[in-house]
Length: 268
Image (cartoon, rainbow, N blue to C red; front, side, top):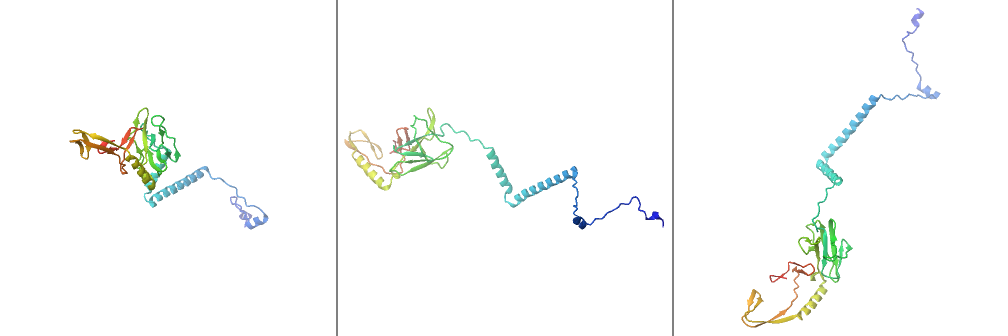
């Protein structure tokens, strides 16, 4: 055998095998340098991550619409609410005098409160009227010994408002306004005081009477209408207190207004 046959060819590689245990015992550290990925591979991975995230979000939204009844309409409603909050619709302008008020009370010592705050009432036609903002307002008044009362007023007006007005529409003079009526009645008195007041009023009315002679040919008011006297008559006028609480008769000398006020088909 020739010596040349035992020589390694020049293209062969030399391989050295090192035991891992020997490296740890000898204290050597297995260091593998970090080799960054090429930019093209990194960009591809980012795009894949974004696509996965988009797919997960889309699937979650679709699953919500399938699981929750009326999910689409609910989402649409929520979207509309958000848009309305971000872009509120401007409120329409109020007619003149719509938010301007005077308050008329028939008990001089009555205290009037608007939304819990006592008010110094302006004089009708002299001082500037009260201005109330949009929304619901509670108007209350107290006039001892009458029971406390209250009514509701809304700007704009609502169907459940309970305050009474002297007129059906705003008064247009130097400035437009409306008048709120705060009136008392026998029904707002405690029972014992109501009975005592009725007796006192009737006693005073009993002292008020007058007489007049009706000559033949003159007319006087009868139960069925005017009657012509055929002979000389003596007419005596007496006053009787009507305690019928169903009457709604407001004759206001300050506002020159009368509401549903009629006696024997005569406008009082």
